[in-house]
Amino acid sequence: MTQPTLFVAGAGGKLGRRVVELLLERGYAGKIIAGSRHPEKLNFAGVETRKADYGDVPGFIKALEGVDRLLLISIDVLGPSRLALQASAVAAAKAAGVKHIVYTSMPAPEPSSPIPFAPEHFGTEEAIRATGIAYTILRMNWYAENLLSSLPGVLASGKWYTSAGEGTLAHVAREDTARAAAGALLSGDASRTLTVTGPEALTTREVAAIASEVTGRSIQVVNVSDEQLAAGAIAAGVPAPVAHGFIVPFDANTRLGRVALATNAVELLWGEKPQTLREFLATNRAALTQAA
Image 1: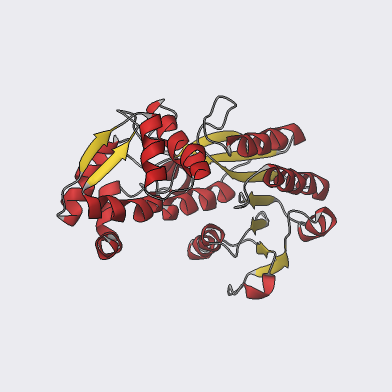
Image 2 (image 1 turned 90 degrees about the vertical axis):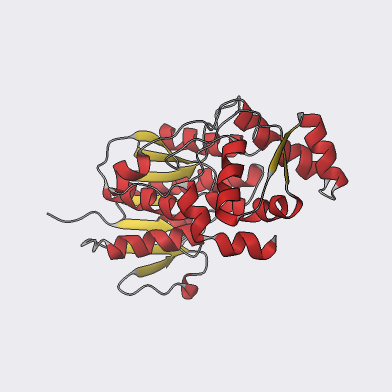
């Protein structure tokens, strides 16, 4: 039986590159195509490369010739143009006869989400569903790697200001999201929407306790209101649009329980359990303490 032809769009990025590597490590016997706006920069042994630009519909249709399953990785452009580009890519997939789309979305992107870029993900999900093509929508929880940017400052000051309250979050390592995406490409063609998370949903206080144990440094969690969080961030030099448009909405989203799920999606799709947050932070201890 002929194996499906797999196409990884965005293969030049961290997630896409790792998905291609995982497919190769699994010894996938079918054809793998890596797509990028700059295919000349791709270097995978035994993998065909093609130019893939979401904004170039005719070009993307050509790139998808003969493709059965497509991994459509969300681009890192924020705003209406992101949805327009991704919707164009979905239209190209339908025109090219792609049989299954795997899309990397975000957790709970429905219209009630306080996250400013949620409409771009939800709109892309809706565009995919409207095609009638089979799909796997992977609602990726927030990366554990985000903590490598935020925790050094917390460790340096010894205080973590948050308006997330007792809300919980199951951070997931990028490696595990790549495993989930690769596994989705290898799976059957039934449509489904899965939330991809780490194994434990933890409060800010619990995350702080783990970080303290791993680094040997104390962290005091200070619960504040959304208004106080924004004011403190601005006073520390964060631009007001970032404070009000990202920092506060992310904490509010957690407080509202919108990222409280802890699922088995990684194990379901890849056959291996995801990393715990403790394992992730221990592996990256140097990155936390050198900057703190």
